[in-house]
Image (cartoon, rainbow, N blue to C red; front, side, top):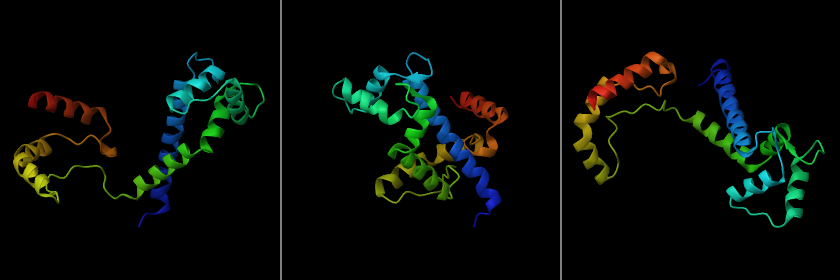
Length: 162
């Protein structure tokens, strides 16, 4: 079982990650960097999603739906409010929650034998090198190992192995 004290930091980190991804999406869409999305940038966004809009009236309708301030452009706040109401956000939230339910910490265990025959054969032939690498290189994907010391240790160890 997970206590509230354990759950709260995890959930806050997931929420911050999703908000950071949303901010990065806005920044990528804001081609001229002026902090708002205009009609051309909205049209480009839907083209990138392979959802081409028709004429300028369609673009204006989308802006009208997204623009809560009534300025004719979409600010970052407007974009965030719209994005959080879309399926993109809901799917990202569901993915983050499913990720939290998985008890695997992302570590690779070389002793996990695959279920199918081809996987077992490949596992058997690669086991010696996998064991040596597993024993000599730190797994820097673990949260407690997100430090420069582990990163440098992994980098130097990789260079030595190469």
